[in-house]
Length: 190
Image 1 (cartoon, rainbow, N blue to C red):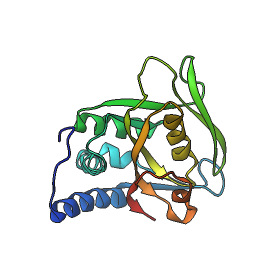
Image 2 (cartoon, helix red, strand yellow):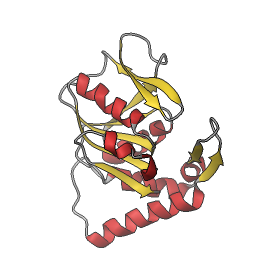
Image 3 (cartoon, rainbow, N blue to C red):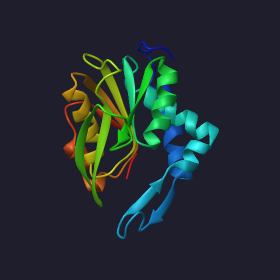
Image 4 (cartoon, rainbow, N blue to C red):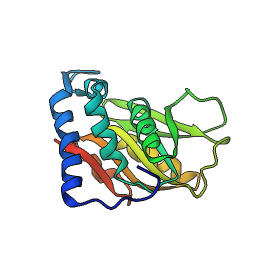
């Protein structure tokens, strides 16, 4: 796939989405009470370790916004997704890091998790972001704080989040309600 939009039939879109959803359903490992009591953790590691599953997920995510300038993946599994999608689209990739992982200067945003609080950072210089069209990726959308904080970082530096996508959306946590005006795609929603 190139950096430019490809016209696909409904059957092609359905087949691609179906392959990705099937891989996620079959291969995701679930862990109750991790990382804290009451949280059910979706481990997508087996999906990414499976060559066909990973390819299906990457192809599905790349089709969300094929005409972007930069793909941004949220720490840490979003790095894997971002790199794969960026390579597929022929763009660069930017890692959105957890607080304290990048040397200064950084642009930082604090947010709430379902089990605490955290911060995300991107470089304040060295990467020109003003005016860039961003595809924002993460593995799971839960309460929505992480993805919303990541999008706010790009808005703050003058970039435009044109779309966001996740592999798995936990719809019952209503994280979608905390997102901006950009389209948000999930491969599967539970």
